[in-house]
Structures are given as C-alpha cells and as structure tokens.
Image (tube, rainbow, N blue to C red; front, side, top):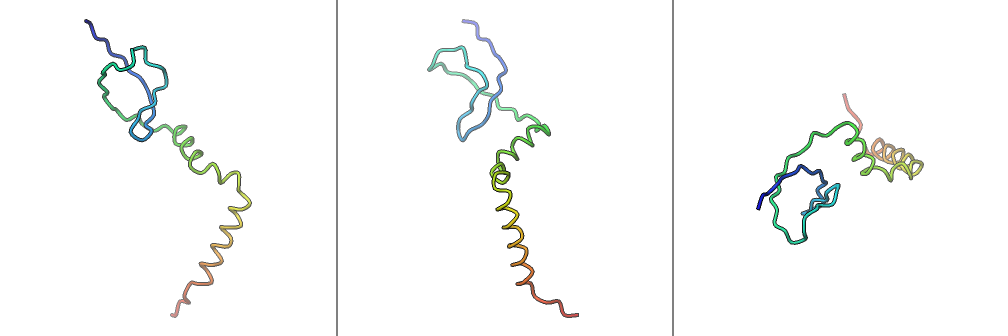
Length: 83
C-alpha cells in the first residue's frame, strides 16, 4: 500500500491539535505527526492579544476607573523619599 503525506495546519488546544480542514482518512487510522512551529505574524499576534484582552474593550470605562483607583492607591502608599 502506498502512503502519501500532506502538510496540514492546525491549532494546539491542550493535548489536541485542531486541524483547519477535515482529514480524508478513516477514523482509527494511525498517523505520524511532525510538529513545526510557525512564525508569529503581526496579524496572529494581534488576534491573540484581542482574544486575551478582548473583554477589556467591552468594559473600557470600568477598566479606566480601576486604573485610576490603582494609581491613587500606589501613590498614597508610596513612602516619602528623604534626601
């Protein structure tokens, strides 16, 4: 039986790899996987950051309030510099 190979792209999700397209091989078939990391493009980086911090955009006003409050707390608890 002749074996063929193809290059597929996917995304790691825990211990699984989610492929972009369905494999055209029967379930239960044994395969060999060779992992090669792809370079992160600026677009991929932007998408990852949006996924990570996307909720901040929804709560932008609350986030601004928190940042102001946090800064005030840091300033008020900062020891005075004695020269």
